[in-house]
Image 1 (cartoon, protein in one colour):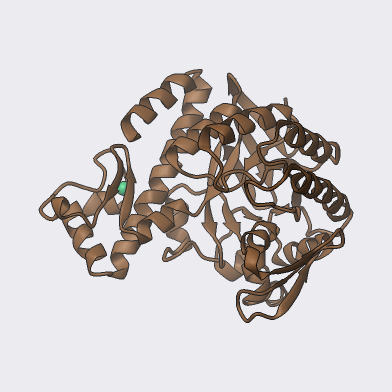
Image 2 (cartoon, rainbow, N blue to C red):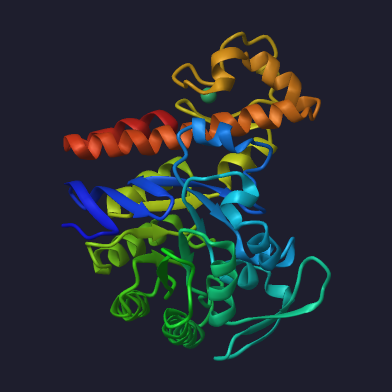
Length: 368
Ligand SMILES: [Zn+2]
């Protein structure tokens, strides 16, 4: 199975190993995408992020539109040059931020969504056409469609309306201009309702985007229900195009969505976890603030090859995080990113060898 944009090199059950070709280079999937919300992966130099094995970063349309402004970034050479990252970038559409900052929404109708900016409270209006234009100015390699992301637990009628509007908006954005070589992905909604999820997935697939995303999950619903919905939706998505699960990045979640046949995923978890003083490790999650690490001379994770584990002890990292030292945040961010990238890399190798089920079981036994 192959196209110019995406080819699959191995499958194991529903899991796939693939190659995604973008204007700024090739991405081997499955891939974990670190989040650089405001054109930076918090506290890290882009060379450090690249050296950890990151292949593609996620940038945030909502935040970059307001600060410093997509036109300013365009005038400074586009997002790659602006942030000093020459590898691929995916930008979200801003839909998730607008709809998750629920208190700021003034009005949603078929034309677009009106809300107050979190920066200064000024009224703003997002449409599919604007989402396309902002991402065109940023010059990302992959642009996402604006979708209507409803909260978990709303009525079926409201969910159905969000599905209808998401398709309507995708049809409009599909016809809007884009940057040279920019790929565009559609997003399916439908919550965990099997019929609506199917409808949305099929309607978006019908629009023939370069890739397809599962949106509106991992927003607080029950995990088992979410994974079932993922299995069902991945199976309905075109097999010859990349599949992206938006907003998952805990170790268990990564392995579950890969098993369902998802190729790409992103999450702020590694850097957010670092800010709480915690490390993701092959022994599970460790809170480095804990007194039991005070005299621990070992690395954060014996099995990790990141710059933090190569040189520093748990005792030292504990001291740094307890004193709110910047280096503590940086070391934990480096480590947590490397852990998720390695976990995902290992999954790709296991898929190529036809050993994904064993890999997943062994990994979960250790980290859970
Ligand atoms: Zn490490």
